[in-house]
Image (tube, rainbow, N blue to C red; front, side, top):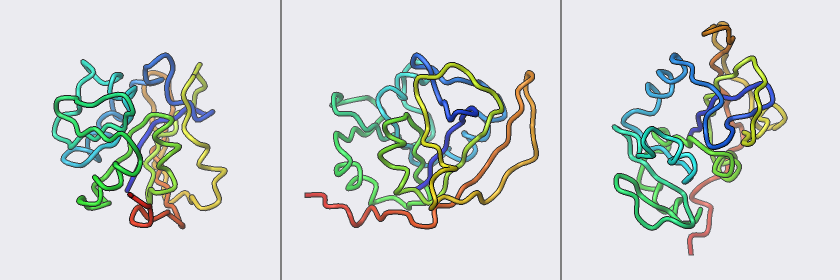
Length: 172
């Protein structure tokens, strides 16, 4: 399982239900990596998408305690239910896409993290865990510095040297 996000210097990812940044190349990067794959998100992330609709050309799984039906998405009401659902997919095809609570719950089960690091600090009320402080996550690669509208950013890829196993979770 993978995860993908864009963060500012303080690992901020969102504020007031919106992403902090809209960088076209980052959006293309996201699309390229996740299209025709499985994406896992929380209900708030779903609501932040265009028209609050599931992403096209992807299998959308929404982890939500309150929702029971969302057209175009599979709803999982618990981590155990989610793990049962994703067992039928190739783990390399699964991407956790947010938000904060979902990242916090699933980061240790992911083997790769694709993080766009944006050299800016904005007001944020949602954060990604500080992966640089996690001993089992190692920076694998970093793109050259890119810019858009005065923002500098890099695409990074991290590897989890000790991912938890989804199969090891009790699903009873």
